[in-house]
Image (cartoon, rainbow, N blue to C red; front, side, top):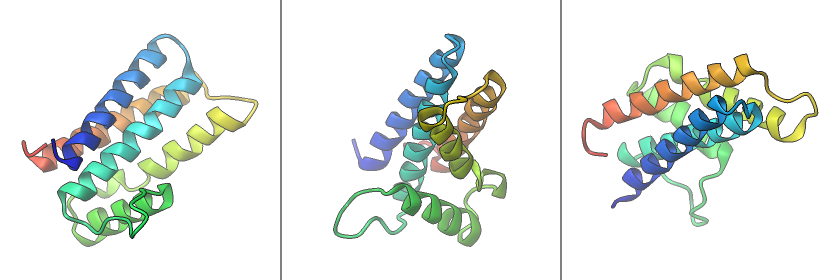
Length: 132
């Protein structure tokens, strides 16, 4: 299995976890899993598109992934709709709220995030067109 396929599988696993957590009314966990579904999907898209990968460290930093996905794959190459540009940032902020703030994530916030993550993962699957 190549790396793009591996990261898409991770995205789908995290998204299934987000769905399950949402159904179980664990909204903070749903937000957490949603963010990681988006990050892994974006890494898959970057790899599939042959975009530049991290330097010598080989680590996919969150800021790096967000910047490269939005800048390279949405703005420059126009492989993905501009509607997807802010999903990584929005889900990261929601994950931070879930993980580090005392007020937590509401059902509405978690539901919207999961819906956006599904849209992102599906768009990446469609662009890959069976390669992943």
